[in-house]
Length: 585
Image 1 (cartoon, rainbow, N blue to C red):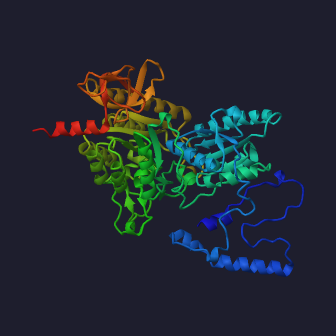
Image 2: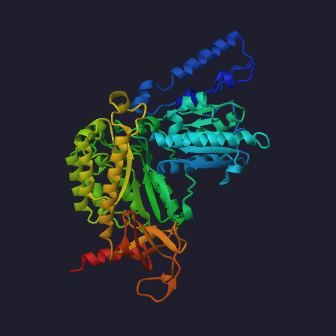
């Protein structure tokens, strides 16, 4: 597959940008055309055809059959660029990351690749030789933010031309794939485009851009997971980290651009995931979040021992847009293995799909003390009619049955969700059903947005964006109001309880306060003061980011809890005490 990609990854360079001189064609194989006669050229072409004919066919790539290129005749390297030319030579790179946690992880992967090539990272934009924006295309507002930023950076770049080495601007991620033509040809604001599956190609792209050309690689892959790239984690204080376990999405929800910008689902081998998490544990990381566009549909098919024929178990009453998949090491197996690495490390995961919560996953979450009792269940709508138009694969009733099952198996679980207001064809009755679902479930965290039509999606081609913008907005505002009312009610139930909090650092509003998060991912704010080293001990110690502390909850709002720290603790100690309390006769 890699050889096929290297032959197909062509630079997108308009004639407008090329110098006016005759360019000798160059090839990425050992069959170069330096000084060949017509007879020799024909022989070389015949040899190339022979080698290509012995390579994989289109069917091989569809089936995922292992393929072999004969005799190593062709190299995956770009032979027209030497290793030395691809080196960064201490040039400084500045990253700006927009959107979801996957983009944070993508930034860490891209930086790891560039760091190996001798680039340096800077947090000062004025010192940057290369500025890379890791972008999001999920909504129009997110893209408009990038367009505005590009204009600012272009103005800065023009000023830099007079006194510094020319600054290069690059767009990485989803927006690079979705808007490649507009970014390169119409606006001409960027030098480099790299899609989510092309980060390995960044050193080459930047080298070619140094020659004055605009350059792009936005090809999507059926297999790229960056499993062999160890991300350079940049989490604040180093106590938490994101670990990507899969990429892409197969669900094809009618409103969603992700399958078209991130490609098909493919999962990272379990061995590389466990290796990265062990390394993070050795570094003292206290919380790891497993990432994926559909994280709980994880399926490792990398080993023969995983390639069984058993059908995937779905949540009861849910279905998929694709044929039920077979075999593979599933999410429950991975979650089990990850949770055993370090009992004092919290494990979270996002973003899941409600269809992929079979009972074995829920029971595992309930049993393991270090798997957070917080589940994200993106509903998107409370109307079965709208859910059908969205191609979500479930009804309102099936979703509520899942919520009941989650609460039964995991007592005290915290729930969060996503909702879209004003989707195609949504009526006032549909909207009221969404409000009633929010009231019935009782979430404590939510992500709510007005619908934004995206090109390439099923909705763009088959549905009508017929809800007026002003109606979308007031429906969204009404959803947010109801959501906050319910979150305030849910959070008020914690007043008087003692919660184990992982400290994140100082509160943004006051340097005299600290903030952290509970197992249920609720923000807790409490005074900065020394507390007992252990419960019932007289010795005290200050609280630092990355510490676990027990906090007595004294008040609440729809967005946070407030309390006072009682003592230092640990996840393992708290879990043991909790188990002992609940097993006493």
